[in-house]
Image (cartoon, one colour):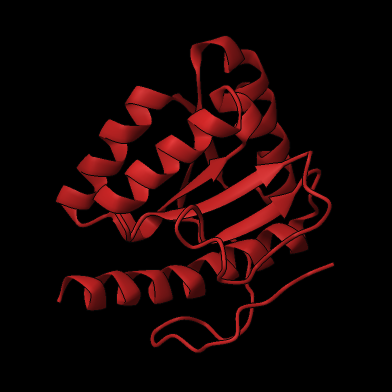
Length: 163
């Protein structure tokens, strides 16, 4: 089952396209999951051909903050697998903190445990799209497209709350 968002965001493509070659995808992991994170990164890279890098959780946080400072956050997307972060609780804490500090950082939650993809907006406090693994190139492209659209909505919502 695929669920799509029900809104329009300005400046975002209306149809899914493949990953931008300028994009940088990060797969955060806890130390105990380093090998599995490398495997997931390799599988996703084979699927879409984009630059995907497994990175320790602390380094991801630093990389996101640096990208925001340098104005490059629009070229960054996190592909988060809860199993690589030590489970649901740790993943939820990480994502809530990340979304609070860096709402414009796109996040795709990806897991072998998901029954299907979810590209709607009801998970915005945690992520911009959810992807069931394994995923095909077209499914990953749709997830990235949905993440762009949904993140624009999330940023708009956060600005309205602050403002």
